Each structure stands twice: as C-alpha cells, then as structure tokens.
Length: 187
Image (cartoon, rainbow, N blue to C red; front, side, top):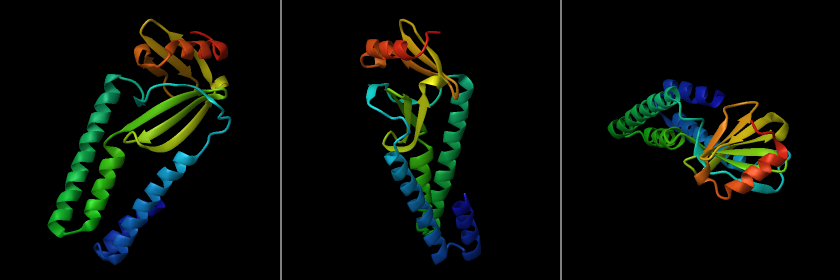
C-alpha cells in the first residue's frame, strides 16, 4: 500500500517524469515478485496430495456475487481503457504498463484449485489461471463435514464459503468421497 501511495504522490509531484517511471516499474516488479514468491510457498502440514479438485472461479453462483463481479469487471475495463487512451494521447509508457497490469491482475478474476492432503485442504489461488498468488492450508479440524449427492459435492469449512463442485467434473470422485469419509463427517 505504501508503494502505491508513493507512486501516486510521485506522479502528482513530477508530472510523469523520470521518478514516476521508476515508481511505476517498482510497483510492477513488486507485484510480479510477490506472485512468484507466493507460488513457491509451502503451507504448514502439506503432505502428499491425495486428490485434486478441479479449478473453479471463486465462491459460489449467487446472484449478488455475480452482479458485483460484473460491476468490478466493467470498472476495471473503464480504468484500463482510460489508461490506454492516456498512454496513446500523451505518449506515456506508464499508462500502457499500468493498463496491462490492471487487465492481467483484476479482470480475469480469481480462480482457485483445492488439493486434498493428509493434513487438510490446500487451496491455491491463481491470476489468469497461471500465476499462483495465494496458498492457504485448512486443517481437517476446520472442516465441518461434507455432503455428496448424485450431482454435487459440498465441503463445509469453518472459515470462508463452502466448496461446491459438480461430481462429474471431479476426476475419480469416488476416491475423493472415500478420503472425506475417513476424515470428516457427512452433513
């Protein structure tokens, strides 16, 4: 956050001069470095992966969340268009840099993949399906249970939204259900 404030203040002070270009490049390198380092982290208790659940978009299909995501996506497109127009009109390379960064990081939304391990659930969140930027570990004691019907699997956790999957999208869904049976109660 401090780096973002510095970029803004430097841009106002110098009118997009050399210090501003340095600040923009610093922010870009910080974001890329953070994404690379987060991808290398290993969560505590991570053991052998027993099963992998399919990659999904974040948290549920409720109407409000979809509407909010649509509003955020439109706002990002407006900001990116403004930055690209500014870059083209003023020949400002920082507009291209920031516009591209906004487009890559914010527009695609967040995707996640959950791995079932001996120690619990390990969730990796991705930007653009490629760059891992967050790795969290949910131990089995924070999983309330699961519900498996003919067409879906729901895993209830103590923190955050339930994890919901279509059973036909899960490779070897019977194995996933057996693993959950051994570790958490059915709901």
